[in-house]
Amino acid sequence: MITTFLLEHKWITPTLLALIVVIGTPVTAALANNRRVLSGLTGLSLVPLAALTLIPQRRELFSRCEITAEFWWPTIGRVELMANVVLFVAPTLLVAALWRSPARAFGAGVGLSLVIESVQAAVPALGRSCDSNDFITNSMGAAIGAVLGFVALRVAQRRAFAARAAGA
Image (cartoon, rainbow, N blue to C red; front, side):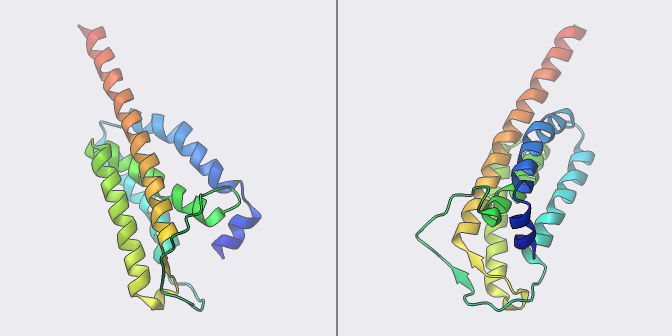
């Protein structure tokens, strides 16, 4: 269902990624010291991730977990892989700012991806199957989010330094 929608609207996932980079990063930098808002936004960013990975689907599974040696790069044409990347960017960006640690946020993103893929493999009633490509592309999204989180934190630090210097 979601894949069909994304196939018909291939522009959505790259547009979302661009919006997160162009708008999400500076907004996160501006909110870097507002832990309450960052916590709320982090929770909101996890809703689509949970909905698109854990809500049961009605479909027949041919395998519970597909581990492939062949990796497919996410592209505009490979909408499902591109969506896997995008799903993890915003949560990791926000967690990086919230925890003030892009490295820990990246680890949490990779860990969350592992948990999601494990649940999909262990609970066939979800109608979802785990896939090593999903894990890799989710982790790529976490890496992008961590890099953006690093940038947002640096911008916030420079703004704070400039404000202190101007006030001195």
